Image (cartoon, rainbow, N blue to C red; front, side, top):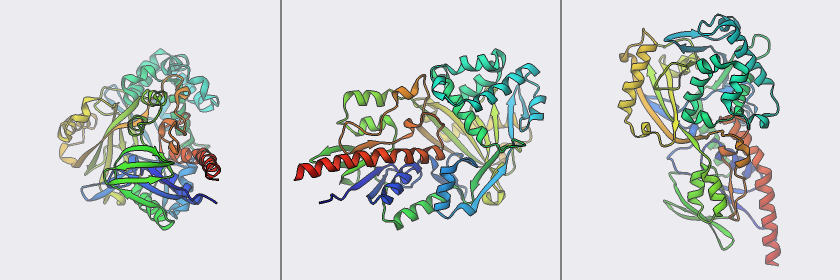
Length: 447
């Protein structure tokens, strides 16, 4: 007699929704439990002065085949738009365009030799296939070897600090390789111009379509349900939540590893130690709605001291009709999970961020700001420390019926929606194979 399986997926981000879709397609009964009042996780949306758009900046590359495949399944492929974008650099108090080879050669802060070595570094990284060798090399050592000390200090180190804070000292060269590999894939052959894309309506539209499709196919989605513990009892998995207890045959947890260590109390001490050893980088990201544009660059990298990592001008990518003629800018600040900035008010952050914009863009006036909202996430992505892949937690756990699938298992890429969808696809054989073995054992025990 076959045993019917019901699964819970804890976490309603893109990873959790994709796991739910795939499990349901394999004939499982699936319930998604999301603590927030809305779906999306890092891809969630919010309202900004009447505009509903993404909380954090996202782009879809032409090479993001998993994301584009999902769009096709959701009948959204026709609303995908790919746009040629430009890149800026703010260094030595000036704004430069770095959007093509000619502008790169003109870039004043670096001499010709430094430029050649910088270009060679990027080209070499784009050709590397064995990323595991890079895991054992500190990123600054690798950069100094290929780009030289001056370029590393002038360009690379400020960018690493902006993304990783002081944790750049612990990062491996594989981190930069993964970043370069994805961005290089955004460039089409020939002119090598950047091609970034988006879906009309942003992730609000994607998430709405995704949820509608899942519910139509029989997936139960519960929002506003915070999980407080996950334990195995009498052959089932009990999920305690703020709205009551539920039991399932199997549970997949998609949250951060430190949350898994806390919420799954019967994990072995070794498993908990491994989960807690993974260090996360957080983000404080301001969404700023403006009357006028700042520049013509989708992304402006900053090597001078600044309170934010970069300037992401979404309206340089997205049709301004989406923003009702206004301009949307993201100002991200990547910090450690315990950074004091998480406790600062929006107004305090606004004062510091707006002051820097005034310094960077002479035409900008604080009165140009129509709305300013701050998103805070303490655990965004694991820091890619030396030999990171050796400590990656497995999908199966020491608790029967409980599985872990999360961003800590992305070992040869950067955190983005395409990588999370890919991770879901790669996790399925383990989830279903392990579940089948456990089910068979239960059947044999019942005979």
